[in-house]
Length: 388
Ligand SMILES: *Cc1c(COP(=O)(O)O)cnc(C)c1O
Image (cartoon, rainbow, N blue to C red):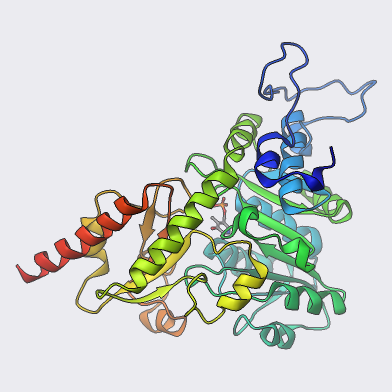
């Protein structure tokens, strides 16, 4: 069977299974050995070489989902990002990164790169011209994130990939928010895709992991650096991640559908002043999102009208949890002004469009009517409490 022809649910369920030859069990065995024979073997295996049986086989599933030749699994999303960057950047090199970036990535660049003598520029915006003007003669990597956190802006993947390629620059993308179910950046010319597998790939809020997918040539370069940095994932967790990923497409499609309905519901609500969701026709990059995504994802943000305190609203929620993270099967919300953007001043937050009223919503798989009801009752309860 040719892997390219398999449907996404079949890839999730079967690609990268390890056959249980000994007992004929239905699922991949877990190989916990940290010690393998060195003689008479095809592969010299060691966990920090990212090549234990479970790591090697799960990588096949991720590569199939992202349409690449190769993939590697890491101990966290940040391990994936840091190992990937350090594979392509050395002293004197320069990287262009999108201005709206996951906080951990942004901190890694700002706090660590000067120690390596690596230069960087954060773009002024997310249009291709913003990337073009930031390029220097020593630029080696361009890194994007779309849809962005928390305002769901959309960067033109193909335009940035074309720009990078025309200048011999490696293009990388953080595909965490979309997941491979909703977006395959390799098809638009991006060189390397990374994920925080802690989010949708894991999907149950109980796994810390990361992944990178690319051509074998790029992966060889990443492997050469990663074996020295050592950010691989324990095989117990690799196995759990494989188990979780069998339902990846089922989960994400259910989450997409809920998010689409909730975005419409919130958009029409008299107590909601603004909704940020690329699936809404009113989203400034709706057409672009439609062109480069299979579906619009399950992350959205919204603001309640002035007079309804966002924190008070969140405390009234009964079903939807407050969470620092995202992408689990359970619906969660957070306030960027209290979490990811808490260290910025009010003016800095205003400059990037993040008000104290902004609520980021990671939509889960619960029934739409129950999520809607929870939001409705929390709005009413908040209004009643503020009048008392
Ligand atoms: C969570 C996250 C990361 C970092 O992943 P960890 O698994 O927490 O290390 C990177 N990028 C995005 C978009 C994320 O949401």
